[in-house]
Structures are given as structure tokens and as C-alpha cells.
Length: 383
Image (tube, rainbow, N blue to C red; front, side, top):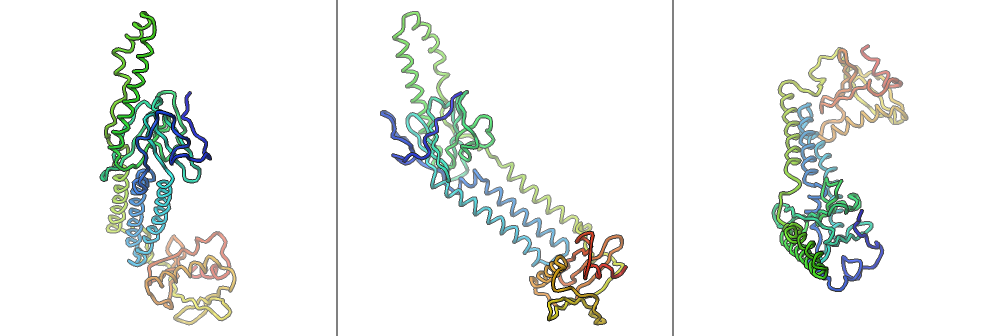
């Protein structure tokens, strides 16, 4: 099995993009590299990721509104998703920028050379003799596109070594790509002419060799070269349909719209997210939290002023985190922190700490099978 020659990774380049000087008679026809914006879109699917992030943010916001939360809280939850998505996109665009700076594609009159790699650079030399065909895929407006190269049978290269400079989903038979290059159609025409000239030169060399044979051998070889010679010529490079269609983007939009419709319909017919405001509790108790000078927290009945229980200065981490979370939600919408909370025990359900200001609730008996201290005292109320 033949393999594409991989040059020394650490050799000094005598010419940009080439690991060694070209042999006599070989010269550069074109040299360039990918555009980082188009590369990020085509290799890392940043447009699909952005669509998914937007769909997730809209879905989360709609679900929050349908569950009775305020517009401020719903917007905050959506903003968190958008923030994480933007960080991820920024990383991908940064990598694409590095790829643009380190990648050099070269077309000579005898081969294609790819110098790729951000952390570890590798150079792949693909002779025309190993190429069976090629095609150019245009990427919308601007003249950007990618040139895909098909190898002859028996020639291979590892997909993971070449990625992302390889055509997607061609794992069994890798196709190198000159990816996201400007003026792709013009470059493809240049490559097509170079490939045709190479094939014609090879055929001419074969014919000259055949004329030196004996008359019988020449006749046999001539019959072989005659009608079949045209079939060996490579077809011209012509624009083809992009290998990545609109289906993934349409699918992402469809999922987002379906999620929004699901939340909207259920919010009209009956909130799919449980809201304890609409359920008559079997027990209800107003409480306020007061922090003492010794850093303990007293849980008090605001009506009678009776201290129901006290949280120690250390421990009770889950209950403390729940109280802080409810307090941050009030701060986010500008609600009064001193307003009472409510303990509600629901029939055939459990005990909840409910905030009438924000509509948020936390199930207290979901913190684990064993409850002690102030949490156990709160759960014991209403039994």
C-alpha cells in the first residue's frame, strides 16, 4: 500500500510552505491558505453551534416564564447559556485564526503540498501521480470554497492526522482538502489545468517509450493506448454542491421551534412545570431568617415572634446554600430581602421552602435520606 510522503517535521523551510527546494523543472503555480472566519464556519460548524446556543437560551427563557418566574430571572438564565456559548465560540474562532497563520497550501506543476498543524507542524506532499480526481465546493458568497482531492486506489492517509484539512465523513478513504480558500473557483481551474498537463505529459512519455519497442510490441501497446488513453484523463474541476447542506441548520431550528411550541402550549393548557402556588398545601407557615451576632441564623415565625429553630454557625451547608440562592434571586429583581418566606407541605408530596417574591421554591426533603439540626426541625413542622 502506498502512503503519502510525510516530510521531516523539524526541518527548516527553505521556502515558506515547502520542506525542501523544488527539484529542477518543478515550480510553484499557486500558494495560499484558509480564511479563518470561513474555516471556523466550515470546519468547526460555528454557525450551527451559535444556532444551538440561541435555541437553548430561548427555550430556557420560555420555560422559566412558563413556570411563573419573572422576566428578569428568565433573562438571567438565558444570559448564562449565551455567555457560555460565546466563550466556546471565541475559543473556536481563536483556533481558526491560528490555523490561518500556520497553514500553507501549495500547488506546483507536479504536486500539492499541505503544511498544516498549529502545535506540531507537518508537511504532506501529494504527487499528481497519486491523484485520481478532485472537485471544488463553493461556500456561499465571497468566492470562498474548498478543493477536495481523491486518491487513486491503494493510496491512503490517516484521517485524524490530516483533520481538519480533510473532507468530513470520508473516514474509509480520506480526501485531503484545501479548505476555505479565497477565489476557490479560480484556483480550482488552475489546478485542473495543471493536472491535465501532467496527465498529457505522462501519456506523451509513455508513447515515446512505446515507439522504441519492436513492431509487434509497439502494435500491442498502441492498441492499448489508443481508445483508452482518453479515459485516463482527469475530468476538469467544476463547482459542485456543498458537501454540508442546510439540513443540520434546519434541524436545529426545528428543534428550537418545537421546544418553544411545547412550552407555550403547555403553559396555556396547564403549566407542565410544577408550581406550588396553584396547589392547596396541607400545612403552611411563614418564616423569616435572622442572622445573629454569633453567626447563627434564627428561623422565626414573623406573626408570633417565636423562634422555630436555629441554624448553627457551622454545618447545615445545604440549607444555607438554599437560603443564599433564594436571597440572590430576590436581589436580582430588587425584591425586599426581609420579606417572609413560606414553608408549605403539599399533599402526597413533600415540604417546600417557597419565596412569594420570586416564585422560586426548594424541596427541603430532597437533600438526602438523613436530616438533622434545623433542617429536621423544619421538616417536622406540620406532621
